[in-house]
Length: 203
Image (cartoon, rainbow, N blue to C red):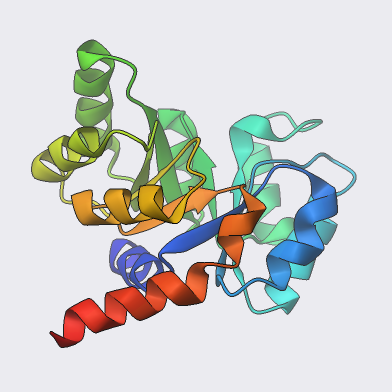
């Protein structure tokens, strides 16, 4: 059910707003995307940022590998769920995916596909751990997206250095459901991409 939820969520949001700097949080919640990836945060500001996103009606995913000031153990995952309560988490770490799933948080496993060996390891890991979605980096290599899509039945998002509408289109055409980007000019292009996708479905 949670994987299905991710699938529908990403289908409706071809561009995901990725926040690297806390000062961009207000632009993020005012964007057309319903999904925000928090790639920043610390013990002092994480709860406030998640609350701002949630109160604006956004789905918010916190990248646990990038949060500062927290010890990433089982107690933290439970605290995250009970006190901070994001929609889900992003991480490269298998054990955190497993623990977050136990706490009923949606899980996105970030995969760095730097070479064929890394791809094999990442695919094997995703098949074993079964996150609700995977995020592929770098996102500018459509053949990597196609290759991963052919091997796993898990929703795919992608990101990393994506700065143009054409790059977004190439990722979506290759099989990604959504593209995450911190490049703010692309945040304004969400209605355009949605309109294009709608037109394709109607043909």
